[in-house]
Image: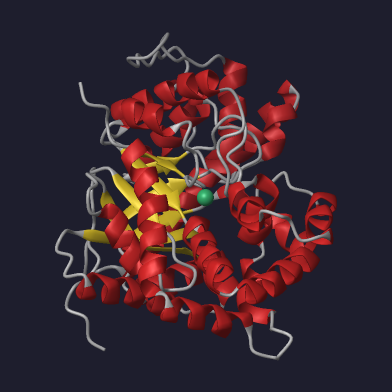
Length: 420
Ligand SMILES: [Zn+2]
């Protein structure tokens, strides 16, 4: 099918990303967006999710296009190629029509810098110059400088903190610039925007690291439309924020101030679904310079419809998920353990909807096992779960749309600025 509507760049307007692992959530996403002041990133998929669900990049964009056409949606919308790590990843996403490229240089982040002694840091920093990652005399840009940001005291480096930030992030900024050049080379026929994401590093991104990262990107000619830091405490999949909200807010205030001063660019919040306790302050602190990514929530709402309409199918899915949890949880930030999953799977709960969709263990179990459910799992009858789930959703399109409108509508309404 030829689609006349296409994803475009959204610029510095606040935006909300909707991942859709099944390709059926578009109508519900548009219904949720109806009352919202956010622009929609209606296609959003990481390479990891595309390979885990055995979909093709162009199918992800097409599913969004089809929903847009059916709903006669006329506002601009975007398509986010999430967590790109290689040139090959980028090429397939460019060809599929994506317009927003999330560059993930986290493999070039040197985590060990956090604990290196000063002489080690010195040696690594010299290596950066020798290998041409940093220019000779680069320290002069930073030492003795002060960055006044409109939140809290000015930021400054001493020699040790500067070396630590540089050893940790210099190679990552070079890698981000390299990926950016690849996007630019392939997108000669259309405008594009890039995000730089370091949200999957181990420790929280400090304000000095953010400052160094953004400054070095700029020096290399990369102007991201968004940066995704790793936030303090835990942004686990599928559940609300785990940690001290005041500490989060204080940290975010300064990240957002840096984004205004050094860009402006948006602060991108990954694993952004279900962070209800944070939304009002995120909206207040970031204003228009905000991008939120959600993904698994739409898949969980699909399974909720399966539970309500075909409980026997859902029970088979839940059992299969429990037996694949430990191999699937690896790359996701979740605190749920195999023991907890086994205990849940041991006997069917009296309130299964609450246990699987309202509480941490059930939600995270379903959240991380989508790969095995959608690709490998089969019903006792032999029918693949993927087909069985599609059949249920095709028979209950209104119900799925309304479940999504309710759930994501709640996300979006908590993110609207409070009326003065
Ligand atoms: Zn992420």
